[in-house]
Each structure stands twice: as C-alpha cells, then as structure tokens.
Image (cartoon, rainbow, N blue to C red):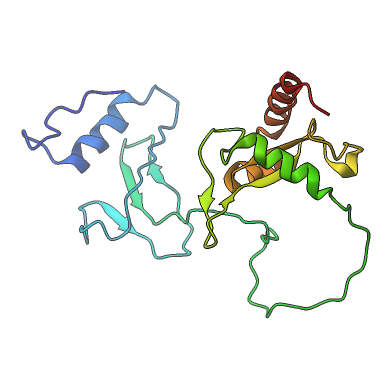
Length: 194
C-alpha cells in the first residue's frame, strides 16, 4: 500500500492522493480496485470527481480506463445487512400472517435447566459474561442443548449449557457453530455429570 504523502494537510487533497495511488500502484494489465467507505451524512456534500449515489442505486465502486489511466471514484451508501430469528431472506411489505399449526415439541426437564443455571452461577458458559438482571431480580441466561434433542441429544446436564442470548443464537446460526459445539462438549466432559 502506498504511503499517504501530504495526507494530513501537508500539500495534497485526500481525494487526489487516493486517485494517484490507485493509478500509480496498478500493475500493468491488472484492473485496480479501490473500495472506500464513507459514513452517510459525514458532513461533506460534495467531493471533486466523486459521483453520488442515492439509496438503492447500484453503482460500481470505481471505474478505471486502462487506456488513459483515468479513474473515477464513486461514493455510495452501502446498506448494512442484519438478520434475526424471524428473517426469511426476502424483504416483504405484506402484513404479518397468522396460521394455526400443530406438531410435536420436546418437553424439556425443568430440573435439568435449573441445575445448569445453578452450575453457571449467572454467567454465560461460553464467554463468562454475566447475564442481565430481569425486573424481578433474577439473572437471565438461555439454556442450550449442545447436541440438539431433535438429533438424539439427551436432556441431561451433561448436554445442556447456560448461554447469554448472543452466544445462544451464535450456537444455532453462527458460522462457527460446529466449533462452538465441539468446545462446549469438551467443557461439559470436564464436569463429569450426567
């Protein structure tokens, strides 16, 4: 990466310096790519040589003409993607539907859950952070079956951990859920309880 000569107001505009770095550092025959993130409403209404995009407009991050060496930076607001347990993968403006459903559910042993919560002493068994205090003074943690009941996992304290809500969701939906499961099972084996 090139050194930013003049970056701090010592003889060059930031946009000009970035443009010259992109063009100068591009290997022959390779198309350079510059990805720049700007906070929306950062106080700059216009920068020379920068095209503005409105929300929802798809624009390339930069354009480079290999014949002339000209580069155009494009400024856009990139939406941040988040998901929750109700995300379906597609946005919809439909009103919420109601359906009558029936099926089987696993009945969890309340004594197992209570023993696991006592073992955890109010702290997430993954990160060690305390759960939050509820209005009635109890500490909130979620109990999680490391080997799911649906996969034949037992409803015993040797298979259940107390997790903070963030790590409980990560244990179900995270990219490293298998790694979490393996480490939680290893930790549970040290307790020697069933």
